[in-house]
Image 1: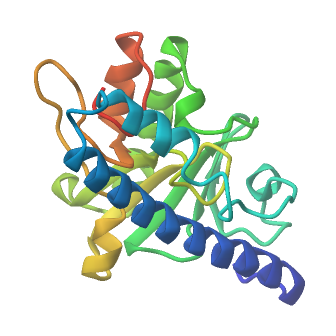
Image 2: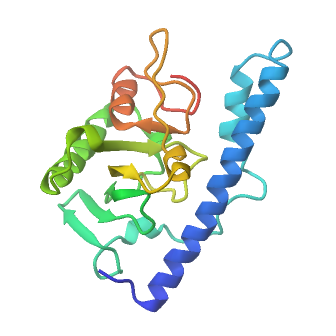
Length: 215
């Protein structure tokens, strides 16, 4: 479904701001990681997490104040909706990074994956099930799928959304935006601004929080 001219302008503006914010975030994260490595005997590692997740993007990189665009997701509002029920909606990403790139979102407003708690592991698995069902309908091989969430501040829309992708990615740079890093020493994930959906569900089920640092 095509966006009309006004809606397309609004969404493209949001996409532009989001892209600028994401690239600024990535640069800031890598910069903080470098400085933390060079001063690791002066400060505990946890300060990196506090800086990255709490302070790095609070100056100069925030999106302009606007209503949540995903709260209004519907065919009438110009979204290419391909599946929905009373709780969730699925639509195509306006700027796809992969061969197929969809978003699964809850209809009620939830800020991000960082907002989730143990009880929300069920919701994450429901979103995963929906994503896999849609990819099944597209005949996408199980080994060519990636489902996951970006972790704030590395997000462009502050409404929980599950990226559902059929690989390959359109470019090497697009692939870099969705790194899945396995955890070590009993942790589910390593340092990454993206969390695989299965990782997120297990982290929450273990009564932990999803964050950029290993968890």
